[in-house]
Amino acid sequence: MPVTYLVAPHQVDVSATGFLTEADAVNLVSALATDPTLETESSMLFDAFEADADSSPEELARIAALFATLKPYLVRIAVVAGSDLMFGLAREYSVYAEQVGLDVRPFRDRATAQGWLAMAMAH
Image (cartoon, rainbow, N blue to C red; front, side, top):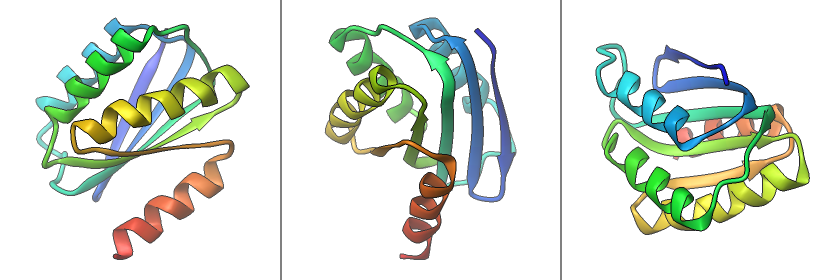
């Protein structure tokens, strides 16, 4: 499953397609952890509109803990989900992420997700 990312000032844009696995999350976090262009207090737009997954609650909790290792660089994540299943997984993931200090919200479209990230950065 291809996961690509681009770091911009205070934002990371991630594009995911195909079937997502826990290993994909590990690879993404490993890459971001060593990326010298990642700035503190950054937001992430995780576009999974063309992706699918079937993660267990235990996997979602481990992935949330993994992303929490990127604090203080990464503080909020907007997940764009194209299917009801992915939206539900993103909502469940947001509960685990909140427990480790990350603000994660699921969205149905990219524009609304970007609006939330922009509003969060303004405050």
